[in-house]
Image (tube, rainbow, N blue to C red; front, side, top):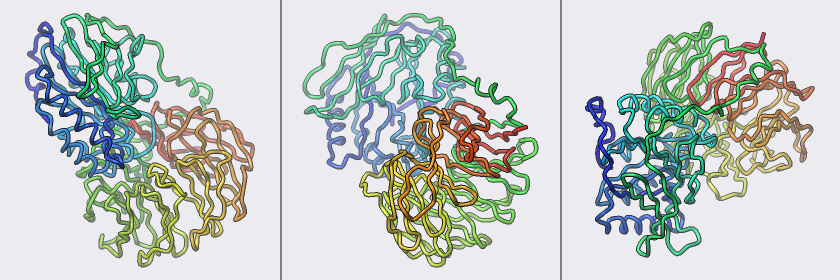
Length: 613
């Protein structure tokens, strides 16, 4: 990684606008390092060699999806290849670098020095920042901490200075908080937004709410002989885009953006909160905005609401009024939903530690593992069970933090919550498998695979449910599967409703609930015999893919969606009781206190107590 990043902030307040001088830069995207046959690596080597041979390229920008799965090994290889550039290069992550990351995205910034950049070049300010989703499946999302950073950068940017903004995603409704970025960029003279993600060269007619927008192709060859990238020529009056076939030819101009002074107006298209008027008897009793993303479910302990955020902070709020009580800083981002027992709070951090705090914020102990701990703990009889990204699942003593046993037979990270059934503890990993271990000594009892060798189809985000000796699990292959809890043998599978990763179980154990990818909640009867959907209900939540579980409490089923809406439904009548929109980002698995009070957290960092009056 080369140059500048944040250093300009030291003198930006005294910067004055200067006339643009012509220059050229290389625009690369979606390299997806980590291909099984080495093709993506070969494509990137060819591009680096091609760019290095050009004396008129001043620098390189790379707009995300650098790797296929964001593994530490893939990131290291990508850095090694990119270090071969003989000119400055600037890089940001995409969803493939964060969504399946074994470090929760921390390794990207550690490997490349940052996950955002800002620099000035010949009269133009270039600003690039990361986008999720992180660890959980969701829409694109500029992290709350990066929004705050963008505020600080733009505050020091002269109003008339030309700005080019770069992100992996297009700044449209593929991003759940696109409007926050757009509104900020419209306060400045933003002359273009560059993005990747779509693997194709595309000029956005009409731009992103009038800001000119250009998507760059993937560096991958796909069905061609070689891959490609874009050469961008900045002139005093325009920006010209040409596709480059490395080592072969530069194709004619395919897009152009006029450089001019912009005076933007705010567009009307924004997220719709009118659903809150429809169900106006549900309100946020209190609402807390964290400084960073919250991608986990808070735990309630002795009137404290406790959770971690992506800026490494564990926070406690008062259950009564939502006021901040205490915070504790770890060394890494937190994606682990905490568990509580006897006044103790357990959770993992991307800094590789499992932490045990009192519910008053004092450290009892911390246990060091060999990689990030994104998995969520479960506690039983003073034993903590938790999985990590070092391919181990552990049992720790709640009182001392001493390791009781460790199972090292995993081939991928654990990011979800295990479930206990008699002598077994059951969980999935991003290695295509569901595991059942002996909870006393950690020995493997069985493991199950859904038949796919594709890591992305692993049953890793789902929290399995169990009833009368049957384990029910769903995965991105969109099947519900019933397994014998004793030996892991498959009893039945069905994709008649195409549930993705979200399930739950009724309080009486008679039904397993599932959330599909389009509007529908479905229920199956619990049984060892093959089942088809007992009922389906259109809840009108639209397209949906977040792995938030369905929780029944006092006869009502609660769940959240990708668009920030929390639902309560009546499973007996198959009707909506109420719905409430908190923001426009992913809702994590909710925690109903009773049928009238629900603790909710969202990816954008909001934590709220919803009250039904």
